[in-house]
Length: 119
Image (cartoon, rainbow, N blue to C red; front, side, top):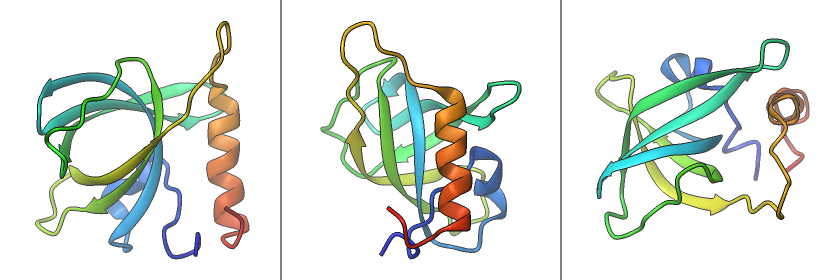
């Protein structure tokens, strides 16, 4: 099942051939009820975070917490735009004083590519 919805790095979104994919990202802001601005890690060495600003939502009534991490189930844009549509999301809750490891997220994305049957 997970091989049907691969986890992508933000650098792969514009070049992907799959229509549905997963993305782990941090919410930067929710400027309108139908859009999000996200940051997603792309490189473990530099811990670079890429900002994704053309993210549309299917659930306009759902609000997201700023600085919270989520795994998003997304649909690639049919029109060739850089943006994509969020179909669903799962919160990645952290306990007090815990932080998400950028290197860990990138490692998870890389492992998911090598072993697509792993969740």
